[in-house]
Image (cartoon, rainbow, N blue to C red; front, side, top):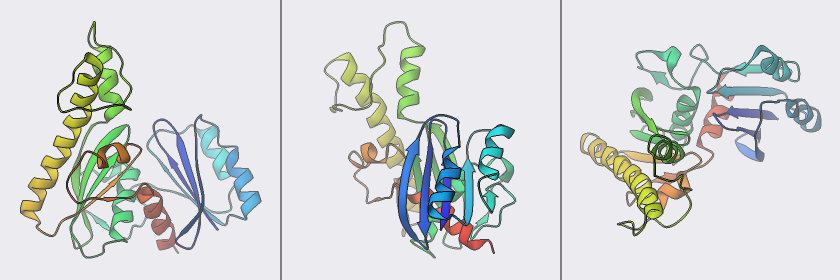
Length: 240
C-alpha cells in the first residue's frame, strides 16, 4: 500500500494507492500531520511520497517522517519518468511535475498541455518525447476575486459559485463573469496557439476549479481531478 500526500496552499490531499488504483482519498485543512501515523497503522502503508508547494517546518516534516517506513520528498533531485528542460528546476513546483507525469502515463508519446486550476493556474507543456518544456503561472479564480475586492474601494468580495452570463447584469455577476470567463478565454487562447504549433496536442485539466472551467471551455479537454495524485504514484513506483 502506498500513501500519496499532496500539500497545497490551502489544504492537504491524501490518497491510498494499491498498484494504480485509488482505494481512498480525502482532503484536510490545517497544518497538523498526525493523521499520517493513523493511516500507516490502519492500512499497512509501506511507502509514502510527499509533494508540497509550501515550506514545511521541521516539526511538520518529523510528524510525517516518524510515521512512515519509507518517505520520498519530491524535489528537483527525485528521479522522474520524464525529462525536464526547465531553466530553474529547483524552483519548479512539485505539483506541476506530478501533473505532467500523470498526463504522460495516460497519453505516452503525445504532445500534452496540462492545465492545473487551483490557487494559481499553471499551464505546462510536455512534448511527445516526454520532456517538460516549461509553462506559465497566473492567479486562480479565488485570488482574482479577492484581489478585485482588496485593491478597490467599492467592489464586493464575490463567491466563485453562481451565474456567469456573457454580460453581467449587476456588480456581482459582472465580477464573477469577468473573472471566470476571462480565465476561460485565457486558457482557450493558449490551447488555440499551442495547437497551431502542435496539431495533435492533447489537453488535460485538473485542480480544484477544474469543474467550473470545464463547463465554460469549448475545446476538447480531458478533465481529471486526480492527475497530480496519479503522477505522484507513478513517480513513487519509478523509484526502486
